[in-house]
Length: 261
Image (cartoon, rainbow, N blue to C red):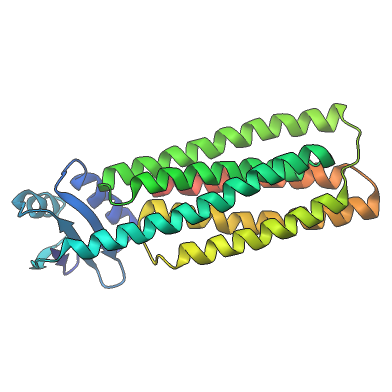
């Protein structure tokens, strides 16, 4: 089902339509084309209520056509997304274990912070796997849940950074910081490449790509912090990058929460 002809001119109208159609179990997917002002709705059977609900918004919409499709193709796409998400989930969880272990060994808050971010990403990817093929309302809830989880981890990280600023004097091992972060950077670059292969506009997939893009920035920051620890022989570059990491995590979470609206 395609609807167009003046239906959308901004993301807020997209959100209005999503909210209006929420709860219709027959809807399996909404594909918005804001540039061309078109909306494609994939649904399991003929539902006059869909067109009525959109017309109620008075956005100047009109029905462009109804086409029967083979749901086998949609099934294959969902299976492909699931396989990609499993790949990046495994990569992130492995590096969570590596970074949190080496973070404590090297006394690096930067690595510990990045490891918690990797753990959050693993959970997000797990939630996204659950969301593949789900109705729109479930996908929005998944995006929101992952955003709130990121905020919780960030708050815990801020408390630990404050404690280390005030009561912790050990200098982090810059060699471990740099080496592990380089490997994590490579892993995240691979993860982002894998996710981009899906070419999906679904909220849960967008959320996954946002997290991974932020991880690459974080890895570069930890590498720089390791170099500064070497130059200054101080704990503060590591604690500063840890603080920056959690600020990025919060910003990312806010963006994810917006996707869930």
